[in-house]
Picture 1 (tube, rainbow, N blue to C red):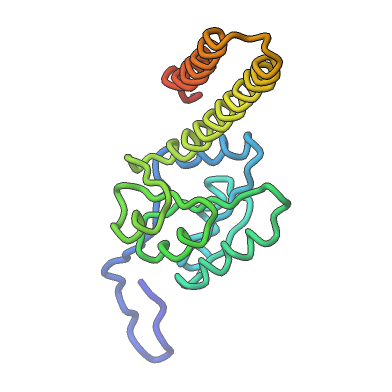
Picture 2 (picture 1 turned 180 degrees about the vertical axis):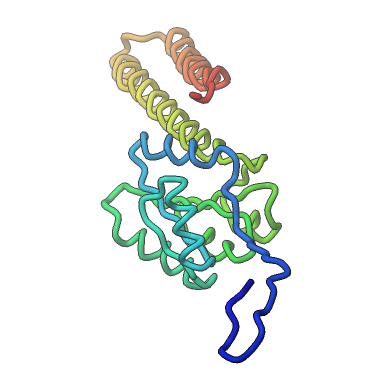
Length: 202
């Protein structure tokens, strides 16, 4: 029975409805993996502070911004970018219309394919499933691609630094020079194709 004002009859409680957002399955594990990789996690939410704080605590989020309007989400992302050291980047993950401005403002915007079209058009990358683990996999794959790019640039420069002076001095015949160039291309392409064996860490 609910408390009534003095001089009135108690009012019976006929029902109680409670609404709360639930974090996606696997979100806590994904956040833990990101933090293990040295990535700072920030939750920017339009929900009330109590609900957002509960989710942030459940997931182990480093920093929380609650009760944020859509335009202010983009401003927070821009401010985060301005405070980072050189070489650091801000990635934004979202799936709703309200996330679109922030996705566009981030260095890398990641949208879920299960979200809105506006979010996907604003993001630079769309994850094909609404699985938070794909955020970690996208980060790890990007690092693997970057490593292959650096390796290929090294080998390309190495071939040219050795081959061009030898060809200029006449110590390398046109046939050998052509073979070395072909070998350079094959080694670079072969090294890039090794990415096909890449598997996400679990």
